[in-house]
Structure formats: C-alpha cells, structure tokens
Amino acid sequence: SAVISQKPSRDICQRGTSLTIQCQVDSQVTMMFWYRQQPGQSLTLIATANQGSEATYESGFVIDKFPISRPNLTFSTLTVSNMSPEDSSIYLCSVETAPTRYGYTFGSGTRLTVV
Amino acid sequence: GENVEQHPSTLSVQEGDSAVIKCTYSDSASNYFPWYKQELGKRPQLIIDIRSNVGEKKDQRIAVTLNKTAKHFSLHITETQPEDSAVYFCAASISTGFQKLVFGTGTRLLVSP
Image (cartoon, rainbow over all chains, first blue to last red; front, side, top):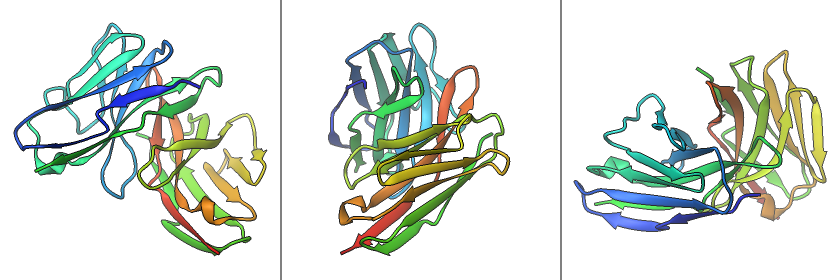
C-alpha cells in the first residue's frame, strides 16, 4: 500500500494565523483526500484534490478557509487560514491505494491546537 | 447525500466474547464498504472491506457481512482480545464523478481482560 508522510505532526498556533499541512505519497495517485477529525468525532471530508484542477470542497468547507494545492501526483498541501479555536482538530490526508483499487490509506495526521 | 449510521456508539465486552458493530447507509449506489480501526492518537487503519458483489468476507477473527437489499453491513469480531480495544469506523463509498468515502460516527470498543 502507499506510504504517506504528513507534516507537521502537531502544532500550536495563534488565532488569526494560518498553517499549511503537507502530504507526500511514495507513489503517484490520482486523488488525495483531506479530512478533519474533531476531538472524539468521526472523519469529515473537507475536500478532494485532483492534480491539475481545482479541489472539490464538501458542503460547509470553502476554498478561502481551506485552500488546497496539488502541484503533482505525489504531493498536496492543505492550509487552514485565519484560524480560530474551533479549527482545533486533527487533519488527515488520504489516498486511494493500489492495487486494491478502493483501499484508502491515511497519513499520520496533524494535531492542530489554536490558542 | 449519503448518510452512514453506526451503532452502538460504545461497546464493552469481556475478553473472548464476540463483538458486533452495525452500519446502515442510504445511497443504493454505494458499492464499497471498508472498516477502520483507530487506536488512541493514531491514524485510522483499514482492517477489512467488502464490495457490493460479495455478501460476506472473513479474515481470521474479523468478518464483515453486507445486505444490499436492506442497506446495512456489520463487523463481527470473534474471540476478542484487549488489543482489539479501539474506535471502529465503518464507511460507504459514494460516486460523484470520483469515488469517495462517507464515514459512520464510530464505535468505541472496550475489551476487558
């Protein structure tokens, strides 16, 4: 399965600032998915990043707040902009894993605390 | 859109007992149903999955069953061990030009020695 390197693993940020999270995959993948997991909650899809096109955002998430880059088939970034304490969560990237076709692997996550 | 309901939210069993977690989904077009285990502070790990053309799949102590007519699927863990303690998430695929997953709310499983 694909190996995903995600960084930073954790950060404490001041409100009003921005944080960029990076995910690097060891193989080329078509889609990369960004999730948010609030404390004690399930995984909520923020957006899907396809190389060469704009990311597709889920209901409740907007590009101005969570801009995403996908410059190539192995890398993506998610920025959490103008942060508030409500943005404190774990953010995870995920990719579809070949050869099982539909298996999805997760990065190790970024634990964000906004103070 | 797709909605995935998961029950129970917490489940406590004695070591050696069986555990069953159930999920229902709403989109009849869903065709892929994975289960993830998430230990505290760690990433979700795929433990078993099933596709819509199969009714049951087993991997050692873990099995998943799917009833497409009723739109529900279940995770069965037999001979539970303390290391099975974790949060388990079910998910269902939806296709909106590309495939993505919708997750259930999670079940916290506690296996007591």
